[in-house]
Image (cartoon, rainbow, N blue to C red; front, top):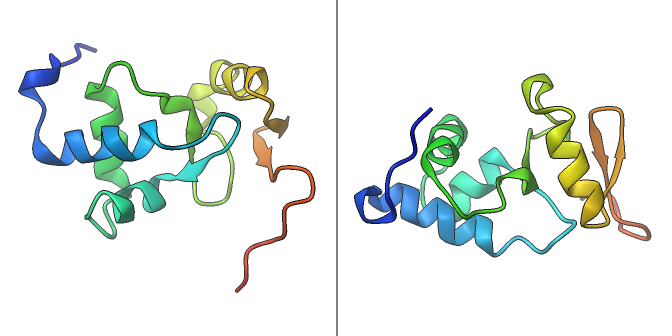
Length: 104
């Protein structure tokens, strides 16, 4: 898979890069959250495509909406998250210690 040089990125890809770079180490956001913050609500699949074109972004901090890592990304994504202090059990990224569950 070839990656585009930074200057050849679309405005959406640049927005995704800005959002992903702001995710703190050891924390995660879902593809849908990244899409929302990048200005494209409902654009989770577009985030996946954008991450495939981006370089120098912590792509491993973006996971599925249910907190799991896609099978094709295991075990590399889990290793990178654990190196940052995230807790991973199987394919699921667990909330940080002491974190409250999200309100429904």
